[in-house]
Image 1 (tube, rainbow, N blue to C red):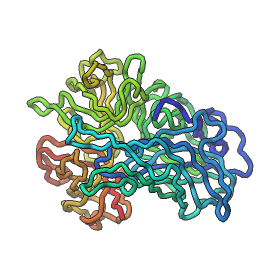
Image 2: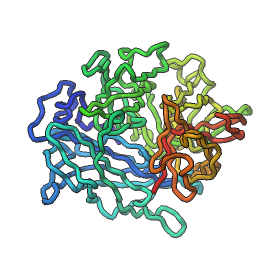
Image 3: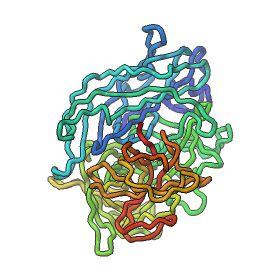
Image 4: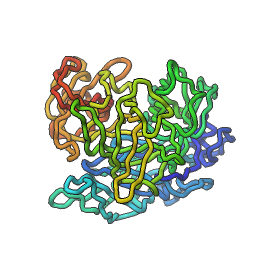
Length: 514
């Protein structure tokens, strides 16, 4: 994930989608006859303690059913780059847009994806810092994946293909359960079926930075749009359309946020769907700080490794494993390193132009509808294992860890893997309630996590491969996607007693692996 851009604009309107190879312009060219538009989404099934699995996607082809004919999907003829750098471990049960292409309107039964330069990083408490880079031996750099069922492209229509990288089964472990470094890429490919309300799929927490803003109607009931660069500059540029129903959050604007005040370079987290015509339509947009590389100000994304707190339980400093940077400055602060984050007292009024170092730190959480229990995120709610986005100015010192003076800290939506401990509360709808999760990550040290679910009309916890809470089984692996809040004091949430020192997750999705 680097600063280079895949010149594939995802634009409003079917004609623009069909001409996926046209680049990042905002003007839609005429459609190409005999072709349909294909979105390629990619995600993963995670493995515990794997912090990073980096590889480079250098090619992708589709095979026509019943023949040996192949069509190149990526790179396209007009791409300015021939690669996309991916960190599959960052997509823990999430998905993102890998590419978009115009392809002939036939049926395809196989996809081949070309990978190179794999690297694995695992959490290892025996090391200081507790990370270990594993030398990777990949069995094949071009796995051939059957598409089941076959993918049919219809002329002048939009289709979508989902690739899932099964990290859990792809990485070999030795007799002691340690990652050996042998990697056999195991992927699954399947068409995405369009459904009303969810389109070609909902994308939770797309992360990127703003390249341009269109604060005016762009047609089709859209009130405006932003052009968003994803994957730290190596992925496609998404034109994210806003409607009157889109919730736009900007901590630095009072009252109703104004799109025309959103500057380029601001980082955004977006929950969105792709509609029938190929438009990326936002449900929520969280506008965060603006990166200024020349001033060493940017966003660091990663996991809390260790924390230092004062006598009142307020975090004053913590170690952050850097999985991603927005934008990428890995030649200055290497990815997969650990930085020390300095935390000032919490802000009462956030400021977009803090002093250096900041006199206060703003604490926020993204994916706000997921916090249906209205839990606070403050200096007492930070704990190891949380995935955070830290905005601030970094300082490099020879032979010392890089430090970051935090201006803003966002609690990020994340997926925690584990097993069912016990059910605590199950509502009559089988959707609302709570249960204890036993996490499998060593970073969480096996401490039980209390998971809350809801079936409220304005926000519902999704259940995958299982109907509801009563059907969860202790033997199955659970992937819980949500917001983890550390509760320093004992209390009660939705009628459930919460012991002091408990990590609580308000769940957006419960996925029971089959």
